[in-house]
Every structure is written in structure tokens, then in C-alpha cells.
Length: 121
Image 1 (cartoon, rainbow, N blue to C red):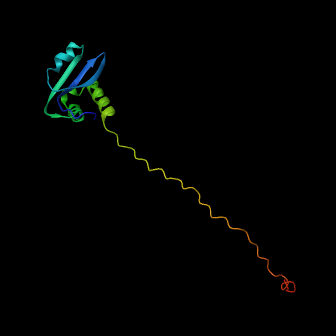
Image 2: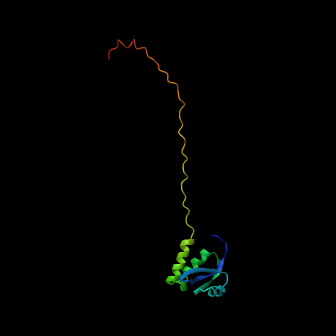
Image 3: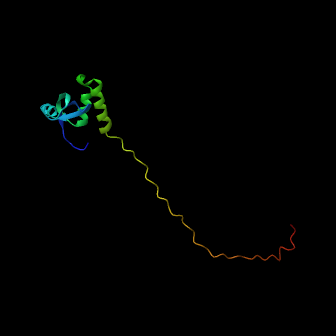
């Protein structure tokens, strides 16, 4: 999460036909939401102040938020805000530069073939 804020009021509201999850520290947030044109405002007070993710987890199981619109807003929030497992890639192996053996001077040994001339094959 981006912040460490704790909230003890959580719920959903509809603005412009779209439901979203809302967070507050005081139930009086209803007045502000109403003033700004929100409809179907449903907020619930929690027993203790918790993070947003924990609040939404509690909200998902509450009876008054079991309708399709509220559950869709909750699921959308969870999908976008739940931390994803970090995909760990294996570190790229550094390619070693090919090592060349030091060049040796070519020396040819000439064998004495005179002794081999009489040998049977």
C-alpha cells in the first residue's frame, strides 16, 4: 500500500452510475459524499481501525454488502490493490568471452624416412 493510514469506516457508494469502495475515519463522511452527488451510500463502522485492504476483506463478508453491485465494487478493488507475488527472474548469466589459447609457432618435425623405405607394408 502507498500509505499506512488506518480506517474504521468502510463502505460503497454510487457516483455517475459506478459503485466504488469508500474509506473514512468518521461516519460523518456520509454528509460529504451526499454533498458531492453520491447515491446509495452504505458505510459500516468497524470495531478497530485497520488498513484499507483489511477493511475491504471485512466488508466483503458483511451481510448488508452481499448484493451484486457492492460485491462487484469490492472485487474490483481487491483485484487492483492486492499485492501481486513478485515474479523473480533468474539472473541472466553473463556470457564469458571465449578464451583463445595463445598461438604457438608451427614447427614441423621431419622424420628420417630413409629407414622406412625398406620396411614392408
